[in-house]
Length: 405
Image (cartoon, rainbow, N blue to C red; front, side, top):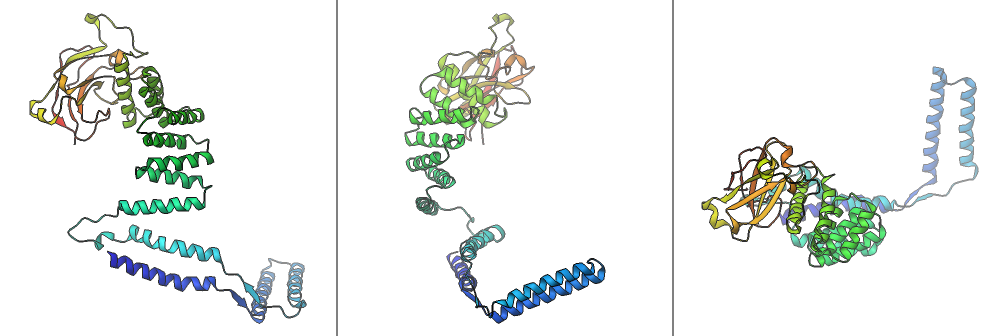
């Protein structure tokens, strides 16, 4: 591999040595050569005029007028005596473009059209991934370049994203700060800045990060990432109702089938449960004997999987439509240590207006053990789903028995 790239680099340098000297050389055109070249051009023009006269494209008067114009050019060419040799400045821009773009084109062209995997050991799986050390070196080169071009807002944003990918959150926040001073009205940039600054502060949004989020929302009140961060900041402050208000604004515009929307819905359910807050859109509870807005049952764990969980693992229990949308209609949260768990899900736990248990003919109840406590299903979580039931059903059985691959 190293030998191949060394040869490729040598060939690229040879090509540059062949291309750059002619571009950089200051060229002088002898006066006789210029006169001869101009005379040839004038002869071609006269021949074209003659041909157009024969075809009838030009009248005789137009032909004579054009011929006199060419004669005036010839006289002007020689009126000042012998001209000085013409000196041409080397095209530095073209030389610079060739010097920078040719090596880049060679590398990208090979990666796109070549077979880099053939260079590796046949017993190993080839990879084009940049190593951490190479990535860090590239980022440092970008950081050095930004010191030379401090007014490049896009460069600072790219540096901020790159440093965040390397988990260098302090430096990333500084880069985003530089970019935000140059582009103060970009809501997306401000949201990224706030998120990175929070990471630099130990994942805490309170204080300056939240202030930056509010600036972003003042620019774009429907910016999804800013709404999500604002809700998280209020949740940290235990202002659960305010957090829910921010997150519900996301559900009005985010695609309901998206993973993002489902994650937000889970966060809303958690805030409602912790804060003891019922859905504003939920109807008043009906008498138990007549309720068709609730589901009751038991969640249990397959004994064969007992060794794979710990009592503190989070368990989400949710109702959702039996077909179509997977948006949760109601969510409850408990721990694996509480299994078997007797649940009641009803319309007061609705995630959004109109998305209730009673508004669907058939629903299912799903239960999932989450090692991370994430409301979105992750690989390694263990889940179980009931058979479809009608709203108002009781005795619903959910057995957590399947590991998510």
